[in-house]
Image (cartoon, rainbow, N blue to C red):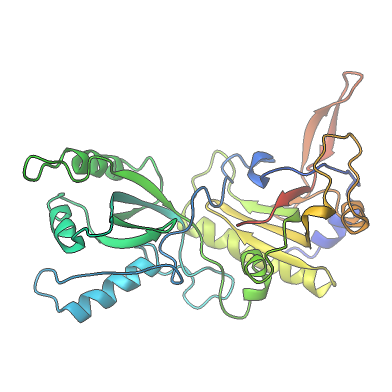
Amino acid sequence: MANNPDCRTDHKSFLRLRRRPTRCWWEQRPHLGKLCAFALLAPIGCASENTSTSGPRGGESTTELSRQEEGRALFGGRAPANSGDPALPRNLPGWVLALAPLEPGTDAQALRSQARAIRGLTDIRVERWRGQDLLVGGSFRERGDEELLELRAAARALQVNNTRPFAGAFPLPISVEPVQGSLAPLDLRNAVAGDPSIAYTLQVATFGVRADQPVTDDSLRRSYRRAAEYAQELRADGEEAYFLHGNSGSVVVIGTFAESDVDRSTSFLPRHSPEVTELLERFGSQLINGRQETRTVRLRDGRLEQRPVSSVIIEAPR
């Protein structure tokens, strides 16, 4: 990172610890319990997948409304995340209230009109999720947001002509979109989109708030920027580095590997490809918010020892 010139030196001085592949980087949670899954569900609100079918409301013209709702949909119903910053995605992760699927033949306009009867629910729109059009509304930071839970209860209880059209309403997460612009080549999601054979990578740094700290829009932006800065420093040093933004923070990874490069057996000494093995020897540990941190491990003889947080092989995002 620009404000921590010792990061690269710290990495070189870390212990060279080999790790067998881990299914998800968030399962490790090294000192960062809240830095969790970056994509529990497929993205919604993405420009590439969004299909907005907005209609007139409150005297606004159809054209004006469609542009407003398209903008809100692109940004997950919240303010744009990047404000021109190439290190930031166009949206910030969060939650929406999924009201009902739009099956073939469903009158979306009529269903949207019914949803407007849910007092307090704003930004009602259509989003594409896992190949299915959904009617959704609102925008919330956390799944347990009190307003989100209250609106869910109200949606489920709403009766229209002796039916409950939104009886199955549920909170739905918004995942982070890939970064666009000058830093797009450093976003791992873009790399995977361009080369589907990428199956694994090595996580060498984690940026995010601690478990006892709240995740906020500002903390996400800071984590995203710091990860992008560190990835650029590693690129300047000749490493194939990428950043991977998530719902609670960001990670920096090095290298892209195929399925055949990684030994997924439970062997104590996994037999990875020479490229993976060489990378593990050089980056055996990872930085936590730009610094070397340790964790307590119990040795076979029962003694406790402080060791740097290990780097970890993770699966590429899909």
